Length: 340
Ligand code: MN
Image (cartoon, rainbow, N blue to C red; front, side, top):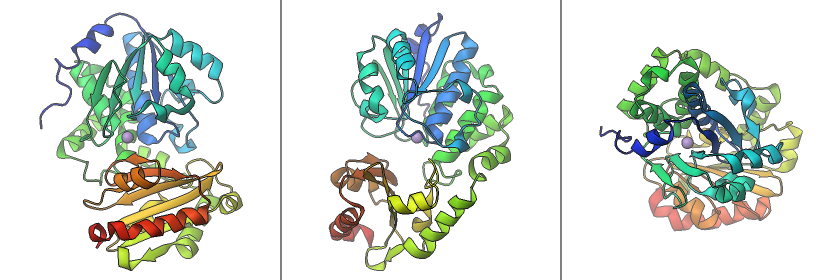
């Protein structure tokens, strides 16, 4: 495979990082495993080069991601906007990880746009916004964490991939590939994962920390979804699950609890498209998953103000939950030829 981060390509960054810098690392709203893994992986690398580094997230993230080294230093913009604004305004560099559009950092958008800092994008989503001083966008990468590994190698800093860096990047790759099973997982990525294990990431421990943290109410909510809420539409090879705000309340919903539920719908034999709808904070949030060539991101973009990857996308709707489901059912005929 051709190297993504050619040494020549990142020469400007190498020069910037030669002297001590004030650095802010940020990532998308409602951060997932790759967002936190890549941010803290980069953080644990840059602090070894004696920079002044802060990770600022636009919103909170699930507790199963809070074990990563450096987590205690992460600043949540929603809880500490004043300090965050100051750090962003005074930063020399802002690393923007795992998102393509600045609006994906939500309330941090204006402070980041207004900051005089040099903005560096490292990401694997399609069609990045032209708003960065240096843009490293590689949609063929399985995760931003994989790109951070390649970035550090291209910086000729392999020796700085210590246990802390390795654990964060391993977790990011693992979660963004659903445990190394997506088509985005190339042979080269397996080699990267092996290198991270050699650097100290203990694979089974990280799986336990991320995946074996269910609460009883989360498992019962999953049971409710599978037994009572799963709708299968054989004519469209489509399946979906929806949860109302009342149902989430009943099961004591916590951030991250609904993560991955959509994959159960997709796991049904012959299902090509799966969707999960949940009603939160006055809107309906939607996760789409698909198989093969079905463009879940196009559907999300056209009808649900969203986007993402071909096989994994998200969107939202300001309609009621019932009307959102109705709308979803009405657009399926348009995609029938791609689904069956
Ligand atoms: Mn990602």
